[in-house]
Amino acid sequence: MKRFFLLLSICCMVASGTAQEIVVAAASDLSSVFPQIAAGFEKETGKKVKFNFGSSGQFLLQIENGAPFDLFFSADIQYPQRLESEGLIQPGSLYRYAVGKIVLYVPANSPLDLTQGLRALLSPKVSRIAIANPQHAPYGRAAVEALRKEGLYDALQGKFVFGENISQAAQFVQSGNADAGIVALSLALGSAMKSAGRYVEIPASDYAPLEQAAVILKSSRDKDTAAAFLAYLHRPTVIAQLATFGFSMPSRTR
Image (cartoon, rainbow, N blue to C red; front, side, top):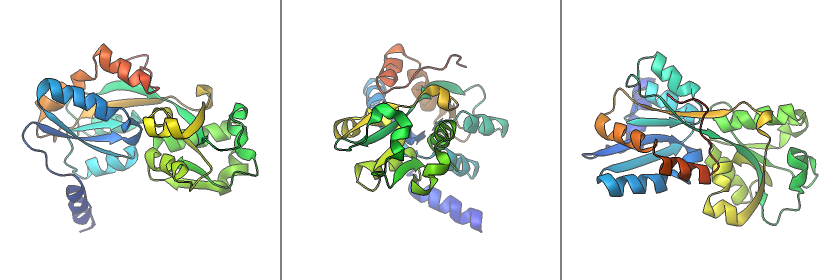
């Protein structure tokens, strides 16, 4: 019965796709750039892309419970690999499409000195720090890992406010519900956040690489359109679009 209600809630959240419309579950760090990429794909092909942005870990559970997605773009390659091992993806479709980065982000009027990096969070002027929930959000795990690497986690953990995904964590800073946040570089480079705040990149050596991957789901109702969109992501022009939002390409692709 519990599984039935979970499936019912998922189906209510994800509208059924129309002919040649694919429904994509995408990590929320992609919310600044993917609408632009999809617009180009739609103009060229006449096929539609409907996005649901959220936590990669939550999408994993939804897919395992039968959520009607065509494609899954995860902020953590381990989730698509798990689906592959469970036989839930189209064989051979796993594609490593990007590596993400995290930054310390503050409002434009913040008094914090970002040249100090994460140590700026020790300021008594910081009472709330937004991060994504590390239980199911890869960017949240990266934030925790970086804070531990810098020896700051124990001193700061009482100040954390958790977003369900990295977009919500960023919104906490934008709305004034947090004094600072550890967020995706891709979001900090989006037009709204870029004009409203400041950021400093957190050294990549402080956390495991945020290697991101996509898969076509075996349950997809339109595998041809899903495959076409995934192929579109391979184009140099699209890779360049991702780069403008702070993503780099993995050293190896498949």
